Image 1 (cartoon, rainbow, N blue to C red):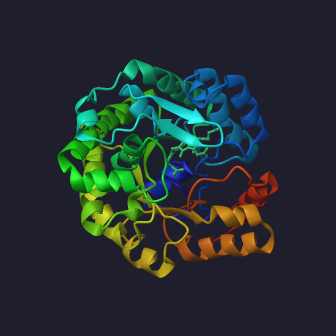
Image 2: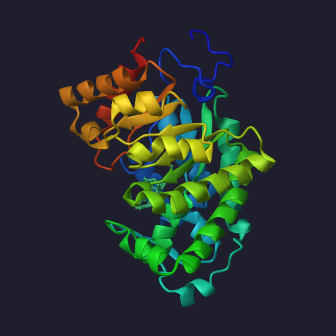
Length: 348
Ligand code: CP3
C-alpha cells in the first residue's frame, strides 16, 4: 500500500492498511520528561486540577505534537477519573502515585454508587473539543479509559501495588462484591467513551496495564469479558468506533483477547515475542508498540538497534510505532528526537 486512501496515516493503519513509514506516537507522551509540561503542571497545582482544567489539559495534550510532530495526540487525563466520578476519593501524592479510599471489603463495596457524576468529566470533553479544533485533521485524536480490571486494582488496594494482590484476593474471596466494582466501571466507561467520541476523539484506547498478572481463567473473567462488554456497549451506539486494546503482559493470551473483545488493534508490550505476534496477532489485527521505555532512556547505539528491531519485526504489516509502555520522566528529549528521526527515515 503506497497511497493512503484518506491521508490519515494512523486511521489507515487501523483500517488494515500498512504505511511505508509507520505512524508514530508514545504512550504518556504528555508528561514530566517535558519541561513545558512541568511548567504547566506547577501552575495547575494538583494533578487532577491539571486534568480538569480545559486550558491546561488542551495545552499539555498539544505539547508533544508541536515538539515532535507525532501522528496522534492522546487527550490528557487519567484512567482514575472514573473512580473520581463515582465519588471515590482520588489523590495523587507527589512521588508516590495515586491514593484512593480502599474498597477492600464487601461491606465497603455495598456503599459504592454505581452511577458516575458525568458533570465532573465535562472538562475532559471540553478539552477534547478544543484539541480537535486546533489539531491538523491528519493527526488522530485518541480518547481512552482504563480497563475495568486495571481500574479496579487501584480502587480495591487504594494505591498501586507490585502484584495487585489485594484485587486478585478479593476476586477469589468475594467474586460477587468484586463483580459489582467491575460492573460499575463497565457501565460508566461505556458512557465516558461515547462522550469522548462525541467530543471529537477519532479512536479509543483501553489501557489494561495489569492484565498480564492474572491466571488464564481470571484473565478471561476480569479482563477479557468486561472489556468485551465495554466495546459492545460503545459499538451499540457508535457502530464504527475504532478501539485499540492494551492488555499489557497478555502474551500468548493475546489471540484469545482479540477474538473475544473485537478490538480493532492491540498495543503490545516490549517483552512480546515477534514471531508469535506476527503469526497469531498481526495476522488478525494491526499492532502498535513496542520499544522498551528503558532503551529510550539509555539512548545511543542500543536505542538505534532496538528501534531497528521493532521496525524489522512489525513494520512489514499494519503497524503503529510506539513504546511498549509509557515514557518515563527521566527520558532525555534528545533520545525521543533520535527515535522520531530514525522511524521517519524508515522505508519499508
Ligand atoms: O498518554 C498520555 O500522554 C495521556 C495521559 C495519561 C496519563 N495516565 C497521565 C498521567 C494516560 C493515558 C494515563 C493512563 C494511566 N494512568 C494508566 C494506564 C497506562 C499505564 O501507564 O500503565 C495507569 C495505570 C494510570 C494510573 C496512574 N496515573 C498512575 C499509576 C500514576 C502515577 C505514576 C506516575 O508516573 O507518577 C498516574 C499519574 C499520571 N497520569 C501522570 C501522568 C502524566 C504523572 C503525574 C504528574 O504529572 O505528576
